[in-house]
Image (tube, rainbow, N blue to C red; front, side, top):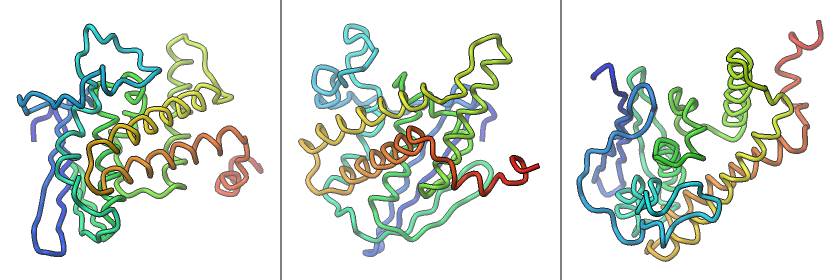
Length: 235
């Protein structure tokens, strides 16, 4: 593996014996996808058809939604598969491998999260620190911990570089509200192109995750985390 890039491989094993592997190659510094396909993206990915209402990108400079482009292959392959189909998935990263027997929507959702964060979307790019330490198939509690940890470290780095830190996490709530809007737009647009529901329900799962994180942060109820950190807060 070249030092200037990272590769995450998702290998799907289906009940009928068939297999499919998706390789995601990332720039090791920016964690943006290094595209290998020169195939012209489908019309449905054009900004005029897909752009989110709060997208900061200029349509004259970006003809296609960068996130739609990156998930197009995924959408095409899984468009005729059921979300509750059971599948075996092996995820290989430069450091280790992960294995799970799960439903297809959860497996596709994990891969879709990688593709969306690593795309050129300026909103989703703020999730890339978690992409560097990717944890496939993470549950809600694990994801919440990783999001909060990432954000807290980001604020410390802002402070260290002379910028204002947001310790009240208002900008994190705002970020996840924006992510919810992205996911809702994707659900709406993908409903027009998928045959069944595996890909569609994967986005729904991502949106449910965004809703969960937004609600928990906005409620400022960290009682579940206080139990974990009692050695830090009770001394």
